[in-house]
Image (cartoon, rainbow, N blue to C red; front, side, top):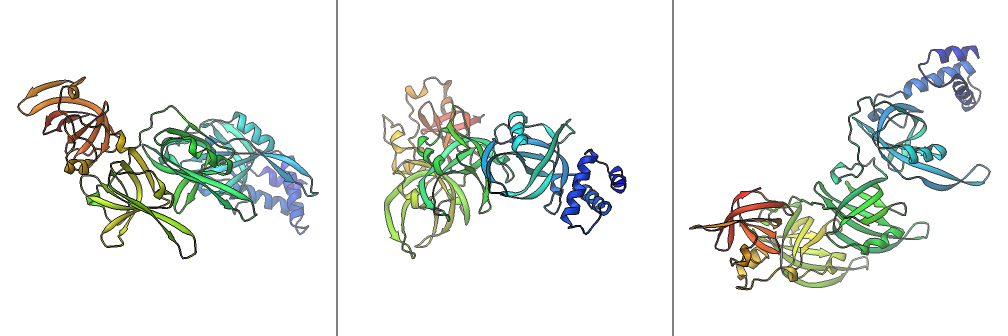
Length: 468
């Protein structure tokens, strides 16, 4: 094999000559004897040359093999499966998916058997690897079936790695990751028939954090935990995979995943639109229910049954009729409830005008039930103000001023309060120490934002002088 040795010596590769000889023999067999060993060695060397890539974005399934450097962003769990050999004998295999990336992109590495076990036990996010493997079409797109990996020193690959991902960090190449968010909404468990005749189950959680919101699909036995959590709890989903559906990302959790409540404070800061500024498209609004109608049932053209319920939401700038479809029509929503309605589809109403449609892609979070809003002892809210804000106005008596810094001038009592923004519009609604304050300000406040407001109380409104 002197000709083979000559070709090998010209290669810039770290594999031993014995492994190169094996590849040459395999190539001869693959070509059914149409090439001799020297020609096969040249073909193998070309595979090596083509396999060296400068970045992940250069990987393609046309490559027989690939060699590249990347940083580990997450390590999935070790999974065991059954497989059959050519003789029909079954055996157990193991696989571990590792997400890696560089400045140009991310890709999934599939590691098998002993290498998979070692990766699950020893690899950590942030390590840099020299990867050798075979690019192929995987379940989520391009992935690399690993032949060999080797730790190398950090060569300056500038990408972020995470213990727990925020929603804005997610992309389709991720699997086996953890995400923590505020539970905004759920959908009930449903059963369905698969093509193979088996029955499946699915339910959904909607999670939000300060960077966005995302739907989590819970499959089969995992779907049964959907009723274990309450809206506004912090929930962590672990070892979940990112998928794309209708051009939007969502998370998938199965038997390999965990879903649990965690003791964390999660801020969800949606960008809401004032009702008076609503246009065609998809919007997120916050407001108070001023009308809540009964649910109606109907029969679709295909004979299936559907349901819809209409409510009217006001935010101080205007009102919007919203149709709640399917499972959302069964939600316990009443007059006076404060809602956050995300991803409403805006369209022309049945009787003209504009209305919102809350479909499967929307989420409805009850910020506060009407029964939980403290009642004013001295005076009931006026009809105008209760419809505009859905909240009771500030009660200017001695108890309302407790625990606040204050002074008095001709403009009214000056107070300083710290709390959470629960409503926005021409005025903002601030909750502090179980009291509600109507705040007059030109600043752009967001739903859920934590602020301290200092200003004078005039006509039962807090006129902000400072917000910090």
